Every structure is written in C-alpha cells, then in structure tokens.
Length: 366
Image (cartoon, rainbow, N blue to C red):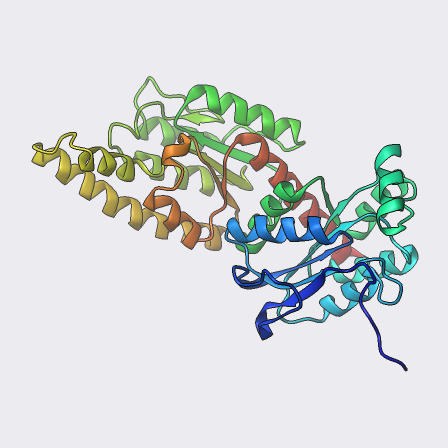
C-alpha cells in the first residue's frame, strides 16, 4: 500500500510517551492514559488544555481534519490496542463509516471506555459541521441509539468529559445506582439529593444498623437519614465525619458514597493562624496540628475503604474559591478521589459511570 496521511485540514498530533508532536504547544501536556481525537483542531486543543490544567494526562492527541484517508474509525481501532491508552475520548461532528464504528465500539467498550462529544444535534450545528469539515451529521436520534447500544458514553462538553474521565480513572465501577450522602450542611445536602435523583440514581434508606450507629456517633441536632447532615461538627474540629463516612460506605444498601465538605478544615484553621488569628493560643494551634495529622491518616483509610469495598466515593467541594485548593485537597487528588465543584456535576458524572457499569454487566451475560 501507499503512504497514509492525516487530514487535510488537520492541526497535527501528539504522542506524549515518545515526546513527539507536530504541534507547537506540547510543553505543558503531561503523559497519561487518555487519548483524544478531534474533528476540530482548535476545539481539540482547547479540550486537551482544559484536561491538562485539571491534572489529566494524555497518551495521544490527533486533530483528524477532513479525514480524506485515515478516518476516525481507524484511529479508534488503533487506540483499542494501544497499551498507553486506557480511555478514548473524541469530539465528533460526523462518522464516515457508521456501521464499522458501531462494530468497533461494541468490542472496544468491553475493555476501554469511549467518551464522545457529538456535535450537530440541531439544524444550525449540523449545517455548521458540514461547512467546517464536510461532515454529514445525520440523525441525532440514530447516533444516540448507536452510542447507547455500543456502550459509548455521550457527553455535552469538555467539562462533562473530564468529570467522567476523573471518575473512571480512579474509582472502581459501582455495583448499582444506590447513593449514600454525608454532608456538613443541610441545604447543600438537599441540593445534592435532588441532583442525585434528577440524574436517575437512587437515594435509599440506610439499614437499621447504619442508622443506629450514626445515632451513637452524632448529637441529637444532627440528621441520621440519607442524606446524613453533621451540621457544625467539622468546624468544631471534630473528626467524627470519618466514622460516619465509614459507616455509610459499609452499608449493604449503598453502592456509591458522596461526601459534601468536611475535608480541609485543618488547612482553613492553619490559614487563620498564618494571618495572625489565634497566634497566641497554643491550645488552638495544637488542636489544628492534631486535626491535620488525623485528616491525613483518614484519607489513607478512605482510599483503602474504596478499594476493599469496591464502592466509588466522590467529594463535593463546599469551600469558596479562595479556599479551593487547601493541602488536604491535594491529598485527595493523590489518593485518586474525584473532587467536584457542585452537586450537579458530581451526580451527572456518576450517572454516566453507573450506565457504563450496567452496560458491561449486560455484556458479560451475553
């Protein structure tokens, strides 16, 4: 055969593991397990940069261009066998070999998740896609059905893409869709519960044993249901939040745990001391140091619980932007625990992960 070529109308490609790039901006892209294909060069660059700034590493990136020779399906077939890639992502305006894609996806998704942003769902975007890369978008309902039947995860944008990627890279797949919520605030717990159920996930009652254990751990003013609200226990320097979390994770009625707040209190207090508050209060400083040590220790236990029980745990950050990255959050990331900025994004990502897990279960039965 002759020489194959990418494009035309391609902005190039990257292979981080061999430090090869035909692009001018590879310097900040870290090696990782995610490959990304894009039928738009500019948008593809945006996606990769967004992921990089969020701590995601990439194995490959290809701007596929107009695909006169090598099609998106060819890249996906290659990445299926690529040992440096665990997750395949793509921005797609249209497929040239739909039947081939469907067959490939059904085989690949048994081993590797495929996450796709499919544009061209509306009349205006389909027209724009045709003029952009000569892609025929086709019926969005057909694409949607094909993705669902082949185990492909469909997302709307790069934010949703990386929310799902973060969970898939670091957490076990859930056995079911039953969610347990632990929150340090009543209102945000209500918002989280609503987001969970709107996403089609279950919010079951805890077992009687779990409820009794929570009652023994918490004062009367707290709520022992699902969600469990520990009110001001964290800001008072209490570490009971971890005991409550272990109890919820051990509950046989729960497949997934969500923690809202409760991490980073030690960093918050340390910042207060650095700014001059409580600088002469030795007892307070000792309490903060002890809290920091215990918080670090319990994050190790958190990871152990996730792996032993096979239950995903995600964290929703309740802190304002000025406190968005305390030291404890860095430890959370190191332990592979996803951090989401609001309940909706956490619930939406978990919905995709649950759907993917359910798809794989069905495949093992056939």
